[in-house]
Amino acid sequence: MKKYAKRIASLLATAVFASSLLCSTAFAEDKKTGFKKPEDDSILVAYPDGKKEPTLSFDTKDFMNYVTITEDGTNEAGITVERQTKVRYQGGCMVMKADNKTERAGNPADPNDLNNTDPDFEVPGENGLPYVYNYQMGIQLDAEKFGLENFDGCTISMMVKFHPDAAVALNNSSMSLHASDAEGVRTGERTVAFSEIEAKGFRNGILVILEPESGTRGDTTSFTITLPFIAAYKGDVVYIDNLTIQTPLTDADGNKLFVKNVDGYNASASIDNTDTAIQVGENITVDSVVLESVPDEAGEGGKGVIVVIIIVAVVLVIGIGVFIFIKMKNRFY
Image (cartoon, rainbow, N blue to C red; front, side, top):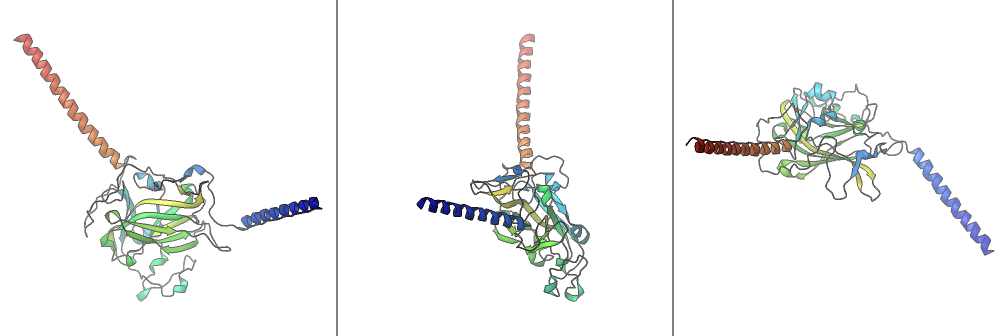
């Protein structure tokens, strides 16, 4: 009897286990959205020691392969992006410049219309001004350029510093994230949250691209970092450095997986923690054309080596000259 009881118990346990597998499979098939593991695992990396390398470091001109200025950014605000090293968090830094000539309202006339997905829909603002959040004036990052299918559930962080002259032109000196799917339909919108001021006035801006809830649209294939211009402004707007993309995946040890660096991160570059700050109205010199993909610190180090070589060469020439002079003197005198 005990023998049959054990068999029955074993069969029941097997049935329960099989049912759980079927339920799990069915759940996985029903979940149509969410982050998808990339086909190429080599693009992801874990940092158990905590020393993360940014996905975009802006240390070389290669960042331009991954950053696109939005159509509204070009047409509505005259936005351009350049790499420069005078104002930076570490190594190189991307500056977003603008030539915005239009005044816009900072608040919608009807908040219920905020999520209208009709691209031709216009929300009238205060005093008939266009509503600033109808536009996406900024830069766009596409998942496919990083080897991903989407950004669902990813956490984006970056070091950010606003130019003081731009504060009055921006709506509360803020920036927003607009997430979109492959058809351009917005899958989310939120304001970037900032930490306290860190090195040289830079703050860590953190934003999360939320996983879509069951039954809602997901598959965020791109996101834009937008600037809300409510007044005319021309000049440097914001400096962005060390942008990191953290995926919702983990490795076998439970460490979060990040999209590895793609634009030549210079790990030897020190964090610029000097006390010098941008003065209102100060002109910032930028290297709009970077001819080489070599970090600036490497170039500066190279200059030091060249100086040493020149000094050694001069000493050798003087030494050889003295030697020849002594020889000639002994010969003729």
